[in-house]
Every structure is written in C-alpha cells, then in structure tokens.
Image (tube, rainbow, N blue to C red):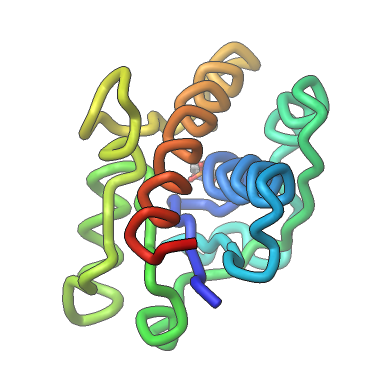
Length: 156
Ligand code: 4NP
C-alpha cells in the first residue's frame, strides 16, 4: 500500500480538500487497493475539528465527498507515508523541522501542477469562497498529475 499525506497549517481548509479530491480520483481509477491518503496540519489549532465549512461547500459543489478530523503531523508520519505533500513553503519547512529531517518523499503540492509548477497553494482561510474554488482547481490539477506520477513510478 502506498500512502500519501497532505499537509497544511490548520488541516481544515487545504489538506482535507486535497485528501478528498485525491480519494475521488483513486476511486475513479479503481486504485483503492494500492493508494491510501490522509491529511494533517503543522499546527495544533484545529485538532479534532471537521473541515472548514467553505471547504465542505466547494467539495459539495464539485460532488466530492469530504470527511476528516483535524490532526497534527507526528514524527511517525515519516515512516508511514511514502509521499508527504506540503501545500506551501512554510508548511514544507515546518514539516522538515517537525520530522527532524527532509524525508525523500516530501514535495510541494504544486510541483505537480502543470499550470504553475512549484507555486504554493495559498492559504484561503482569511479570504472568501472564491479562494476555496481557486484552491480546488489547483488541487484537482495537482492530484491528477501526482497520481499519474505515482502510478508510473510504482507500476500500478
Ligand atoms: P489550512 O488553513 O492551513 O489550509 O487548513 C488555515 C486554517 C486555520 C488557520 C490558518 C490556516 N488558523 O490560523 O487558524
């Protein structure tokens, strides 16, 4: 089983949405027995909480099931997940600090966005619903390419 962890700051806006979008694609491609996802935050702010209502709304608008309870990144994640996807550079640096090393499978999510490779998924928390739609589109493109990359690399 190949495991992918999506990471942002709060684990209520971006990363649970990334997880939901990736899960929908895993189901669409029939990869449930090969790929597993989770998400986590670098902060403790929203542990145990459901996704932000605006992430739930944008997921609903795109018919993407979403369900997650906020949790913080833990040091065991570096052993459990082959892929750790940071939403922005600040998340990336915080993950390196928290894990005490830069794991081989740590990437910036938008390294896989063909429209803007290496850009950040901006934090939509202090903005409006349109910001969540923009984030959805970035994550949708990036998840698509990430799954292609993993399938090719692992022959699945
Ligand atoms: P996320 O968004 O990192 O995409 O989940 C945020 C959620 C909460 C906060 C910041 C960003 N906050 O400061 O509480």
